[in-house]
Amino acid sequence: MNNPEFKFDSFLVLDFKSGNEQALVLLVERWHKILCEKAFWVLKDADLSKDVAQECWKMVILNINNLKDPNSFGGWISRIVYRKSLDVLNANKRANETKEAYGHQQVGTILDNDFNEFNEKLLLKAIKALPYNQQAVIHLFYLESYSLKEISKLLDLSTGTVKSRLFKARELLKQTLKNGHHER
Image 1 (cartoon, rainbow, N blue to C red):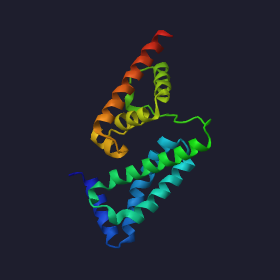
Image 2 (image 1 turned 180 degrees about the vertical axis):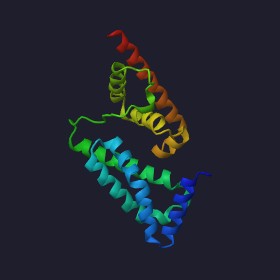
Image 3 (image 1 turned 120 degrees about the vertical axis):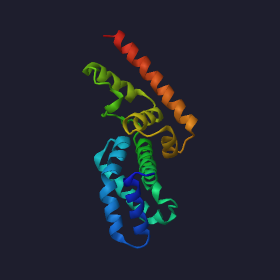
Image 4 (image 1 turned 135 degrees about the vertical axis):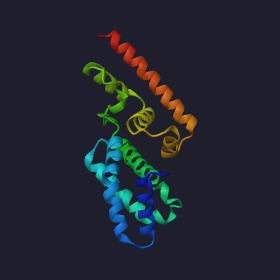
């Protein structure tokens, strides 16, 4: 963890734990937009995403003294936002089973620059058709560049389960794209 970003976050965490409230302000400035983006990826609703991010900060304030390793702040807060987002999503899903869920508008690094617009739309459609747990690992692995180990911690799954979901998702995407090319 020689990354200066991790060290700065660690310093801010320790400073806040020792009573400097300005350190929390700096953490919020550094992380709030990221939390909103992570929540939005799950919820697809900007207002709900902001609410979830705000709830996460409340949880940080209440639980930061339980954070044993200040260097793990980024992973810790990311897990909080994903779990809280999933809780909100599941609550909304139970309340409204007919609501369309899980659109994904960022294709990012999954796509090669050579893909034309048709292939991009086909890939987005294929990703949206995946089960949510497979969409999540595709997003975290390809778009957010998390390692398998980091994804397993973030989603509270074994590394083997993450590998399996990623493999199955890629296989489904390959099959869908293969079939899509024949349907032109």
